[in-house]
Length: 170
Image 1 (tube, rainbow, N blue to C red):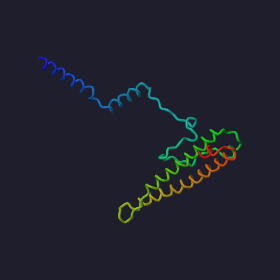
Image 2: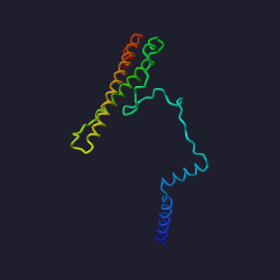
Image 3: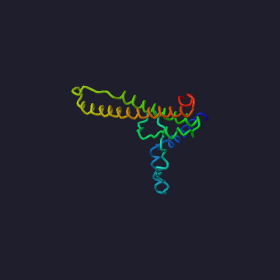
Image 4: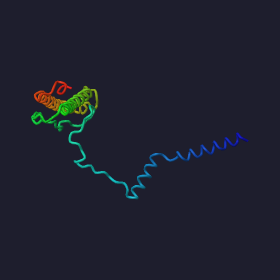
């Protein structure tokens, strides 16, 4: 009798579990979206320029353009109004920009592979795409040189402001 009762309970549990998981996650999401749409509660967020930081921190693998980043000008920084911690953080941020650009250049360089055009049916287009990548690398190298120059100027300004090498060469 116990075996029959246990097997009956097991069958009921399996049937219940089957009903619970019968609806897919996509169906549930669709229903939720439709309910929100019907209620009018689905709100769209509008992002304005005030909510976007002026110079975001970049990851080395990021594909963002770094040319628009503005480092603090060494001329304005030389006024001596900065503490050692401010100098150090500003210089470190500039070093991060340089490292990010270098990582982008390395990643892009590693992805450039020209082919013998006659061996592939789309070899010409492929090589044109690789040439565009090569041009992007050249543009990034120009930006890298500018960012390195800014870093050197910032380090020199910190040195002239009387900061120790632990500040301008962290």
